[in-house]
Image (cartoon, rainbow, N blue to C red; front, side, top):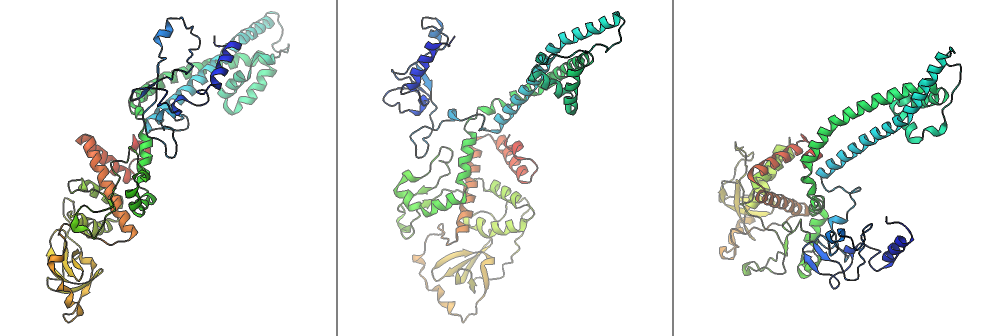
Length: 477
């Protein structure tokens, strides 16, 4: 079935057709085919459909699908007109998730055990008649009263092939080559011994297979459902790319260009929810002086406490550095508490300045207006406006006769609203803010997507992974 000159001719004809060189999903079928469902397209009218081994008049043909084919709806690959579908991946070279890794490992183990048993059984079937013949020859020698070994016998070299020889050598380990040599020189004595050894190994390996089958069945049942998550690895890679320093810097440098030409933005279904927005103008007329070409939405309702706990676990022993970073920058900038610990740790920096005093800070000279309680910081009036300053940012007190006495001459009516903050920072500060926003946004989406118990266990698993209590495979599973 499916052989002969005619079949070869038909296959060659199909190969030379316009649909024969590439998979059907890689052609532009908008005019030739019809989209029946989101995942299925109809075959073009001129597409050659053949069912190997089945006649066209057979009733089996009526049960087979010859009208449509599956083409997963996915995103177009950048710079190409072809669809990038999970169905086109090479399963041997690419693993989509940790569950598929387990299934493939179980499959490999089953294959190796089955092959070892089959090779051993094949060698046993080949040696059993030879062993029976050797036993009869020994009995004939004993019956004739001749000493055993007086007659020399040789094993026919064609009696065993390479698979049989390899199976025999494998069960004897390092001494396998020596046993093969004795088997060829003195088969009358060695063949029955080898045959008995093969029988013992056959029984032993089948017993081991029965025990392993329970573990295989359990592993397959636990990982079968998770292996259907075909986009897990692809989405994970895209999310990791969005955290890359080069990508974040590119968003900042090319923000205006992205706003003019949205097609340049690298979009992906996995990162659509965490991508920033790009603008050419500020809709708020009061902020016309500052045009944020790039904007990211962050709310106080997001799980900042969970982000705090994860960052604290990441710093580990350097808790003082993390406390200083949070209370000195992240907390004041986002309007968050200075600490989320159950026992609030008092600030290491004492509030040693009072309102009305003139101070020199890292952003310039100014006069203290008031002191904020949580988080602890000073409200300072500068020549360019009013802002909040952390105690660590104040260098020293200025004398009352300093020229900074004129800094209070600014008109309050020209100041911006209290809920607006402006930060002039370096590239590292920008990256820190963007990475923290990405972390909080992903935690917010995870909390919204899964149940409360699942979200809690997910946080605990992340903390254990950060503290090296679990490895990567166990964490992903």
